[in-house]
Every structure is written in C-alpha cells, then in structure tokens.
Length: 427
Length: 165
Image 1 (cartoon, rainbow over the protein chains, first blue to last red):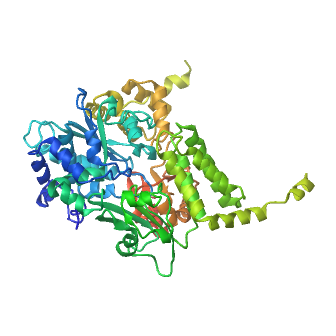
Image 2 (image 1 turned 120 degrees about the vertical axis):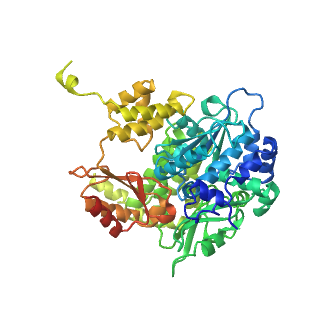
Image 3 (image 1 turned 135 degrees about the vertical axis):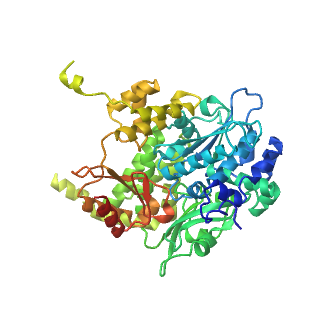
C-alpha cells in the first residue's frame, strides 16, 4: 500500500494534469464541504504525528491556536530537510508537489489561514523551482489565490528559501529566519501556535505531515489511524542510507519492524558483512546495537528503547565502519551547526569535537570517555532548543554501547604517551 | 575623499533585479522577511556578498548594515569572498562519509590542485566541504552551483571536471 508515494513513479507526476488524473485535488474538494473543526477532529482521530521528527500530534497542535486572537494566522511548512540521513521530503516536493499543495489547502481551510510559507532549504534549488511551477499552475486553475475552488477563501503560498543552517529546521529558529533574522531559536513558551511568525498565531508542520493530510480526508481518521500502530497513525517515509544494498526512501506503516526495513526493504547488508550499529531516526537519535533493532518503528516504541524515531532517517553501519571516527564526523557536524546562542551547546559541541578529533588523530586518554559524557550531560537540559541534546545523545550513546571501540583508542593513546619520567628527563 | 573611494563604483542592482526585488517584497507582510531572498538575489547578481553589496542590501532592506552582516555570516550559503565559476561543495556528513567522501575529497583536491576553501588560479573551480545535502540515499554527493550530483565516483568527478574545464 502506498499513500504519499503513490504517484512518485508516475511520469510527469509533478504536473497538475497528471496529478489530477491520479486523484489529486479530490480531497480538498471534499474538505471544503466539511466544517474546519471536523477536519481537525479527523486529523486528531488519525493519530497523525509530526513527521519532521518531534512526533507531536498534528491535530492537537492545530487546536492550540487561540480562538480569540484577531491577528492573521499563518501556516508554515518546514521543508528545511537537514537532519543527516534524512532525504524524504525531497521526494514529495520533486515528484508530487501538488499533493503538498493540496495538504496545505486543507490545513489552511481547517485552521483558517490565508498565507502559507514553504520554508525550503537553500540547497533544494530544483525542488523550489518545481514548487513555484506547481503553485503557478494551481493559481491559473483557480485552486489558489483570491479564491480556492470558487470559494471565497483567499490563499497565497510563498516559497521561501533558507540559506544553509541546520538549526533552521527547528521551528522557532525557522520562524526567526523567515522574519529575516539570524536563525536563533526562541524560548518556548510562547509556542508558535500562540506567537509565531511576526508574533502572530502560526502552525509549523513538516512537508510529510502536511502531505498525509489529504489521505486522512480520503480514508477518514479512523481508517488512517488503523494503518499504523497504537497512537502512531498511518504510514511514513523511511530514508535508509549507509551500508545496505538498496538505500532509498520507503513508505511503510508506522510500527514496521526496523529489522525488516533494513533486511527486506533496503536489501540487507553487503555480502560477508556483519551489522555493527544502526542510527534509527536521523543522526540525532541514539544509536542501537544489532541486538536492539527487532522493534517497531514508531515514536513510542523507539522512545521506550531509549532512542527516537525522529525523522526516520535510518543509517546502517556495518563492521567495516570505525564507530569512533563516525562519532567524530557527527561531533564535527553539531559543532559546526550550533548556532552559538547558548553557552553550554556552543562550547560543549566545540569541546566534544576537539576531543574526538584528537582521539582519532593521536589516540585517546583514559579520562576521555568520562569527559565526553560529562560535557554531553552538561549540555542536555541547558540549551534553548533541542540541538544541544541532539549533539549530546549520540556521544553518550556511542560511548556507552561501544566502549570497546573507545578502549582501543585509549590503549593506543596511553601507550604512545611519553611517561612522566621521560618527560622530566627531557625537561 | 581619496581617489580609490571616488573611482570604486558602488554596486547597483540591474533593472531586471530591481523588478524581481519588488516581486519578492510583495510576497511578505513586512519588508524584513524578504531578507534571505534578497540576499540570494544579490549573490546571483554580484557573485558574492562583498561589504559594498551588504551596504546596498541594507539600503534596499531599510535596515542597518550591521544587521545585514550578521545575517550574511550566519548562513553558510552566502559567500563573503569571490568563488570560482563552478563552486564544488562536497558533503562530509555521515552517510557520505560512510561511502568514502574523505577519499573523494582528497581526489578532488589533487585533481584541482587546491585545498578546501581555495579557488583554482584560472578562476574556474572553488572547493568547499558542506554538511548533509539530504541526498543520503545516493551518497556520496556533491553540489556544483545549483545542481546536486549523486552516487559520486572518481570517474564521475573526472568526467564532470573535464566537461566544465
């Protein structure tokens, strides 16, 4: 069964005519006959979760909008796909931009918003152009603009390009960036639903989340929910990369077994290789050992296993991969992307990077694992946004689950270190 | 005022760019929100964001130039130095690293005869390393100007550079 990926392989699926031949824009017509609150109730019943990574129930987010605020309301689609190992939203925007637009229309109708910004990462030049073209087509057809399908409901959709900053995937940072500022995260509360873009009530949803909304309307909330697991409705796109035969993006029900995704859908490991580790939900999610991957891929099961489903960017690491070096690659990334606003994250990510780079280059010291853990734990809970945690959890996870790999480096480093007497002799 | 200052012409947006600016501004409820899009346009017009371009953008945005500088330097896609005709940006993040991105970086360096952050003497190629380009399923990847090249190999790099040379 396929939902958002149904038309991915249809030739010219990005064009309006082709999209309509394949069921496009039927759900918005149905939704416009429904009361906005009924749509929100269906999305709640569908157990549609925030598929950008946080997993917050989408319908509940929508219902946080204040009822009595006279300011305009905004819908902002987060298309700043940047979590390492994640490449799914790109497929929707490339192959079925009208599905995203249809989702935007339904969501806008449901929350009574007349302006939508699609904040797309700057590097997605091709996808931004595809979206612009799709918007122009939808406007020409009378689906968008002053009226939506003849209904007195104006809706403008604006494609806004980011400019290279991982942090802007975080919703409050994204809003600052959209306002033309440096992408620094904001303290919450107030939450964006109350004070978001230009201090107006704003709903920020991921591309994939919004693209499932037409399917909630088509199937009904209850049916949609039943496709997934408990409290995790429907399906989602799993990105699989790393050491597998068939890396790619696979649409499967929420709750699909991680082992099956890797070994059946993604073709399994290369001949003669042994599985060493799996990062299940984008680089920020704590790593799993081979013994831990027999579990359903949904938000609650991954949380119970001490990791997170996140963006469902599955990164597979086999026995050819040096995990200390892999962690150093991740530490370098987070140090580079820390926005600099909070001291524990800015300094901590820098130190974790320096220590890991030195371990890789010169060998470790016996105090390194404890120091790394101490720095990581000093970041968690002490930064405004989740980047600090995202940078720390991999460090804690790798060090705790693969101590032998670190021990090798420590052994090498301690042997190479000149003894204190030798140093004294030199002095 | 010395000669250098009088002879250095201040950058100006072309007529077409000015028209595009108006379209950009019309899409936002406030002027400041257009910042990133205006900077993208400025970079396309002038190749990189020089201090002079920052001043021009400040004028157009009706914001202080220090604020423009703060934004320009926060985001990695705005070049504050001139770049070559082809800006090669190789992904160094985890999924590409697994697929030998470091080996390809060394290959690119030796093939182009430059280090990361440098431009070839003929002004053709600039080499940079970037974080995840979100094409992990087709790693390793790199970006050349607006295009993303997937499933990179040394042979593919050779072909591309030969074509662009």
